[in-house]
Length: 87
Image (tube, rainbow, N blue to C red):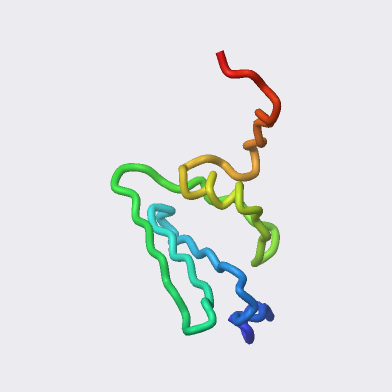
């Protein structure tokens, strides 16, 4: 990835890859002892993988959770519930 995307793989960043069918994700990261790989496959649905204009995209932690939960990370907005009273 360092040669292909010019990104430092040992930086602690999480790299997310999606297959063409959009039903599988691989997450790769360096945890100071080696590379760790996390894999998720959906049985019936597809991930809402964003259409990218460049080969890379930066996601917030919340956007990553949305992606893994099946939400569109681009068209989805955060709901601010801080200070709200639950009924």
